[in-house]
Amino acid sequence: MIAGPSRLVLLGNPVSHSLSPVFQNAALRSAGIPLTYEAIEVAAPDLGHVLALLAEDNAAGNITIPHKEAAVALCARLSPLAERVGAVNTFWMEDAAGGGVLVGDNTDVGGFELLVKSTMDALPRGRDSHKRQAGHDTDDAERDEGLPDAPRAVPTSQERLEVDSPTTAEKARRRKPAAESS
Image 1 (tube, one colour):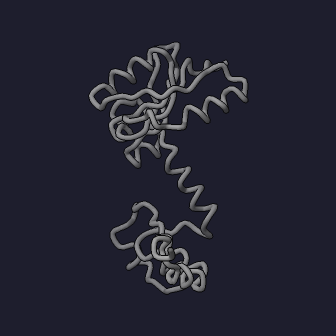
Image 2: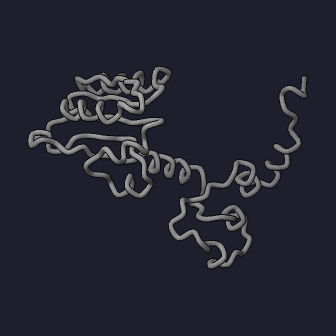
């Protein structure tokens, strides 16, 4: 049997405003998991020390602003995605009984990709992706020039409206801001 973490934490600065402990603790209680999720405010110079102490405790958790990029250098092993994007937002210990290895991953990209896929027909790539979705022809070489591994380009909400419904986009343009309508 693999031992789970002894503690679950959120590291960042600031984190006192975070609602994560509220909903994570509700989920832990509901699932009958005898752990709590706590937010710990960590100053940038202290991140390495805090992670080392948490590793000794076999803790796991999340990392948020401003530490996601700094955490990359502090992990002994990274997921391929965390390595590629250069940011860690989830960490845990592997082989805690044998001294332990701090592992970092990034779940932001997958979560964002799921959101985009659930709200759009396809994941756009590269510049002018909104034009391709709207049916404009763009040469592949021109479209991807200089962008072989570029992150997916997500169109603005206005571009998305124009692709999905020109009529809706026109209505949005004509709508007066709330301050003007009073």
